Length: 115
Length: 114
Image (cartoon, rainbow over the protein chains, first blue to last red):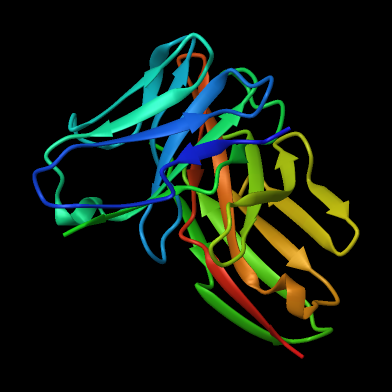
């Protein structure tokens, strides 16, 4: 079992550019969440996907969008990048989007640097 | 929405001592409280969790307590070892419109000196 896999692991962009991050959930999981972790901070919830729809969204602007595919994998897109978007982006997966019944598994993250 | 406060931000102990990290949450509807450990450059990993119908849970050297009335929960690590050095995050789960999400605290960096 490969667990949660994310790509790319590191990337550098310039202000105003767009970025797409990818995530494959742990085998058997159907719910994917994305978190932004700034240096020295806790993960901040961006949004959660279940059954290919965004089910919950945190306090992030519309520049942040996502998608979930029929195989449960997911993408996070960020448009018009700002310096403040530099962070580690974590994908997490679990089974079921309702009441927590098990561990939320995290990927290793994608480290985004915006110059 | 939910707000989780975590203290202290940094905790230094000697090997063998106990360590306690405390968190408070704002929404009384929160019902699940996990703790994650994140080593440098690694992914957060669940170390223990507790549900709102339980007051305390233990797993070897770690334990978590929950006080629903006061809306706070704590992580206790006994007989600390250097490999316990990491950043620890508490979190609270709340369910909105049928879907649950986790809100994390800002983390506690635990340093265990040999």
